[in-house]
Image (tube, rainbow, N blue to C red; front, side, top):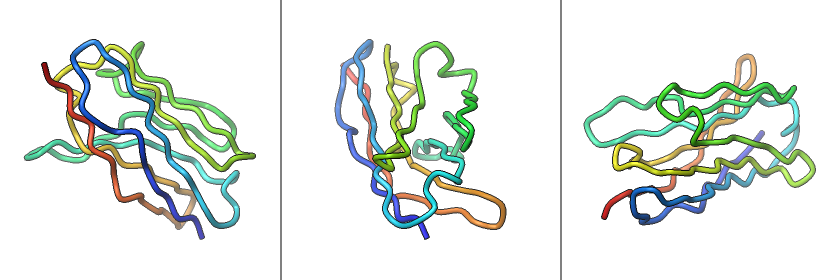
Length: 115
């Protein structure tokens, strides 16, 4: 029932920051776990960060200490704060909502880290 739209990507220099946003519409947002994935050209889509309906978070080792996932259930928003960005963070970032028997993906937002 959830539709997702990502925003906030762009071009940033190494060491810079971006806050990615995922806006959800539809019902039952709060019962979904939410995750950010990314996919670089020629690479598999990989999990970046996850936040459960209860607020527990997990991060890929490559982003620990740099990225923070959060959610605002009242606003039906999920965020990914990305700090100290590196060229290897360049990818299309996707938002996912999921629960048992269900998953929904956003269209993605491009993050390019380059000097």
